[in-house]
Length: 219
View 1 (cartoon, one colour):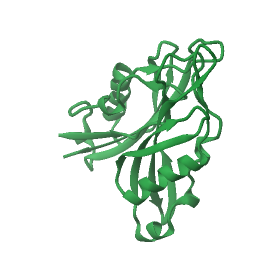
View 2 (tube, rainbow, N blue to C red):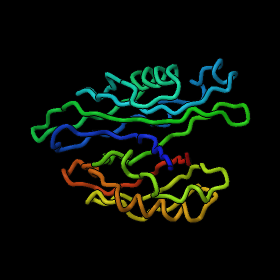
View 3 (spheres, rainbow, N blue to C red):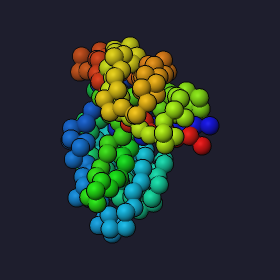
């Protein structure tokens, strides 16, 4: 049996049919940095994945952040606190021009590389929103992970998202050791992933691009 984890992307989810979709107005790469890694966890070699969900207020602030998946409670709490302090959005607007609340997700991996803290951002869908849960994009038997010497691994895929919300042009940017796993990873993703594309100020959907980090292991 194999298991997969796509870290939740930086995404926002509309709660109604907006005239203008929400968008980030601060750089998400500045929301959490290596300077935020608790030194006691670095010293202890503590690492972990954190996926959170939150509300985006009419004023564009992150509120009600809660943990969806965390390996280390302290890192989950810290992720939420930093997002509520630093993340800012232009809120979504309805057809009458009034801002309304929406929801978002965010995922990172707190890692230590050669004794130094590292923050690996999980995914970015370019302000598009997954129509179906990324957790369902892969299942047991989808990838030949047993071909890997260690039975586990990770890879990074980049792709385009069309105005119809379909993924195209998927390519593996940081491959796993298995060419078969790399080929199949994009095929499965293009077949299953669907998105609500972002909406421009003209009220029309626009194409965008994104990436995901996929981790997998055999049991």
